[in-house]
Length: 476
Image (cartoon, rainbow, N blue to C red; front, side, top):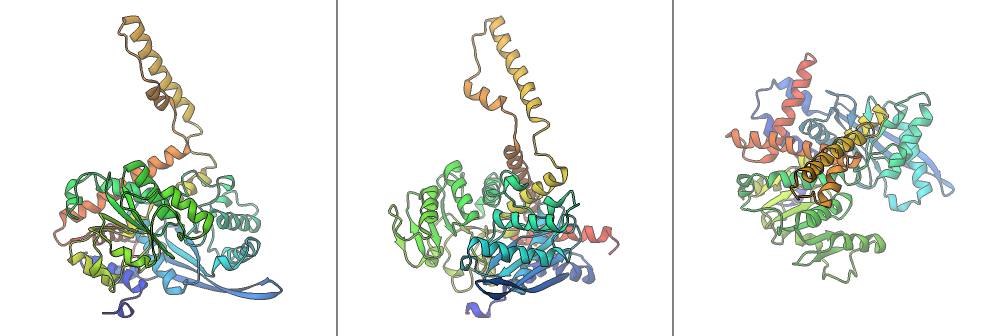
């Protein structure tokens, strides 16, 4: 069976939805309402560049408005089209519901190769795209809140936020119109790392349950586990960095567009990242051999495979040869519907995208709340917390001295205990809690519903039931 006859990305999302709905007692009308995309706006606009007018095509899709604002990234890529944007918007609906962020699902995209344009040209293009969306209410703090995605980052979000502020000069909540902004423009500490950090927290939570990892034929902790990472962009880089540096995992393979680096004892992720940053390629990296056929390494032996690049990289053409017993979908839709069926029948455990990469929207939620409250997290309570801790330490040391106990608190303990939680610590704490509770909701369905045999269906069941409850509370 060739990849070409597989369902499209959008069809795959709908088919996965249908698998879950078949196990639920929803009316056909409500099921259809949840499944379909509410609306998609297509814009074609011109920008004068290099002495002529260039025309660009962009999209903003709203999948579900059961909660508002709706939330979802804006990607800049040549592959962007209406079907892709609508599929991603649907995933955002289910993702937000799963991790209990109070948003509906949306997504946007501009059909463009960002590397074709310099920074000034890209700013003109981004601002004009933002203008077209803003004037139609498709970027608004209370209605539709974008974020970074493939091909976009803090810089583009800052341009969009500034464009909104220029067009809405009296909106006190203007900064909340978009998330993923630089710290200096109303962003939040921990947002850049958020999706990769969420992958780490998701794996940590799964590994707290020996019976769960046993389903993938694994045991023990993350330390020493051999991991293959496809795509060392923002998500893949942070996930690989944290898992190797903090959990002792071995990143044995990093797959990029122009080849793969392989080192059985584990690659230095930060060193590889810096090489790519300086050279734009993994080619020539001096500390590990390069395999030219990077995609073939998806099929290499490992404990955990983390596809963190494009959708559809694991499909019917390679699914039967995938050797990883556990796949963590750090990208959106990296495993096609057909491949999912093949892998599931072989006993491969897949941590689905709507859970595994939900760290980004979770911390975007925190940033949105910060912008609406107009105060940095921790600003009011941090020093009071430190003062209370200092009182306790002082009392303990006084008791030790007065009673002649002869013990002292270690300097390392005192430094950590006396330090109050700042914004980054609170963001990480909130993200960790979110990933834990979402996993627990999934595994409860996974283990207690005899008709549910995988985490993906469990995740959809949790998400759809929450969306359905929101619609039912509105009278639908």
